[in-house]
Amino acid sequence: MLPEGIAAKVLKDSYEVPAIFKMLQTDGRIAEEMMYNTYNMGIGMVLAVDPADADATVKAIEVAGETAYVLGEAIAADAKGVVIC
Image (tube, rainbow, N blue to C red; front, side):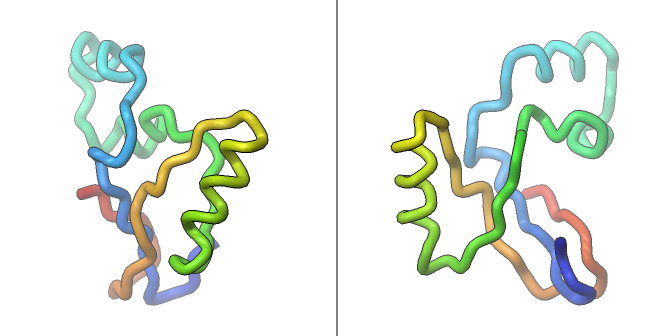
């Protein structure tokens, strides 16, 4: 979904990582980067919206009965991809 020159900056502390992923990482001795690449650490669907629409989007998702988090932001980067912070 990201064009060249844009990366997704994901803030690790923006949501609670489900315990199963913590257990898999610890027991399997799997590097954090691989956990995010393979399992997304429990993140399901991701929507990219204008920052001005973030609060309204979260509210609409919660009204629909789901839980939503603002995970991060789109940032300028040398290559597209994901940056975990």
